[in-house]
Length: 314
Image (cartoon, rainbow, N blue to C red; front, side):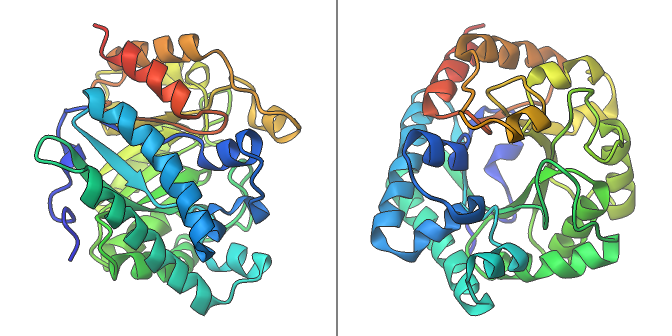
């Protein structure tokens, strides 16, 4: 039985942490081959599971010093049918690995959670196509049908929620939300934006959030921004607007380069950790409900250590 599905602990204003750029950290910092950027491939054997366990524990050890809890995100960003088949997994083997991913997170939670430090388990849902560029574009109905496979599997596990990362066009995000609603599991939608603060589709973040809420009766538990640097969206935020108050989480890129620049780079840009930490702290004013902090491409646990120290340095 899911422990927190009916009452997500991160919905309070207490600060929760999550992890950083899982895939870029493993590939560039640890030399681990991830076919098609798919971290779930590591779940196929015990060595891979141990790599993931050590990765998560680096963040949990930082978080427990100051935060009230942690959102433990399964390495399932690429665990949808198209990417799995491209790598060579059957749907049956994919289904098994999704269940294993939640089981592994439960083991970590059993070890690290206590009454003062709550851990929510999330199954990460990625876009059908590329995260930086809208591709394999679907209608809302098609997106709901496509993502229902992964979301139904997640709902049948002990996961507390699903989190859709790097949403770059809104039909995909709306379809995911409707699929989550149909399967009675909480959903978080995390958009990515370009350097102008707009979704890669060209839609404004404001319009995306408002339209999704209107079409789904505000089913999304909260929104996040990921895979973008604070420089790219800080100037579009309005702390008094309803849509801005719906944003509760941030997983920023380490670099302030554009998606196109990052995509064309052969080396990892880790950015300026101290400056990134200061920008997180500054976003407290622009995003009054921001209370879930993590990282995305180029970040690792050392970035989050700096960010946490700045966050609590009032």
